[in-house]
Image (cartoon, rainbow, N blue to C red; front, side, top):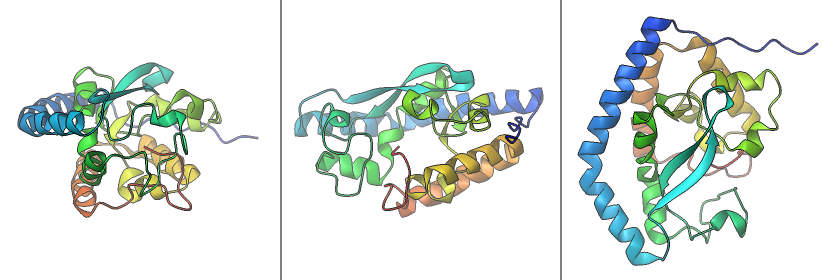
Length: 210
């Protein structure tokens, strides 16, 4: 007999407060980061041909798909050459500018637009691609009962360096425990993690890439 799917915690008041935090923080973040985004866009264009933004179909709340935005850090169409979706440290598909953007997690800044559009939240399970979701068990699909996040419980426990099964379990734990206090704790730990630059790549035991 399979385990029952966990139910999301948090009531209507929490969801309203979470959305308010998302909108205020994302708008402020984009305003403050606009000069940085402009500089990054110029550096990306100067180093290699191709678009500044990388767009990928991801699965969000209730299984709905959306186009997630990131700064491009690899050669165009990188997912179709080499290791495909898996990204390792020193991957030759990563550009020099891209390596710096990844190291500082600046490539994720366009996710703030996804947050403003209501497709993502500041905190939640990282959104994954349809081929990954197709492999979920019924219990694991509970990961889709909350909005995906810019950062999450799995991210502050090791990010891409964790085995995929471990990452899903941590995300399911977040689903059942989420609260404004936990969200703020995750955001604080994310800042420390980004400054340390740990867990960016999957390594020997990690799961799917970012």
